Length: 284
Image (cartoon, rainbow, N blue to C red):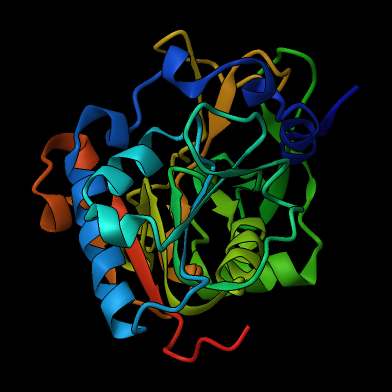
């Protein structure tokens, strides 16, 4: 049966329930301690800015086994570390010493608190609608049947998704591929809303409108990963599927290259950091 690719992706997004990400690829936080170092500085800045509220919480969403949270915590002076709360969220509990919340980040209702929330290489795993333009430049929803190659299925009719494309990824080039970021935007809005004061940080492989407008990503960014290799992105639960994130659609907040924040080079240096200020009022 032919189904929209994003529907099949969402229904089979169970890879991490049975596999640790570290068994299949290395995230940038595993490749270098510089990410944990940079975030620890942000944590300390926010602690001082908010004057050390008693419920100050550092939250890692999509925490894997908690290695990033451990790395951040190791850089915090012990007397402050004990006064902070540490929270990790993922589909499977890890070994990190933290308050673990297990479940699908798309639906979890997190406690509200001041502090720092981190979503590192999370949003690119959130399923999103994939479209391909026809020869007139009109977007069609991409579908898939079994392990066949994805192909245009039906015209995109969702007004909200069409409006998103018009705003964030306008491109009428025949046969160009685009990825509608509304699902990522909604997840981020829910997550950042749980930070009553402090900052929310999204770190991901992403792009911005000026890159999309010039056709840099017109071939699409959907990829599959398994056992350390890039594989065909077949949504059957046997590989991890990702697509780059339209980082500028998430929020009106500063965007920085990872290389500028941490000094990391190569492809990982091109990752984007969105650092969203959530204010200084600690009312929960």
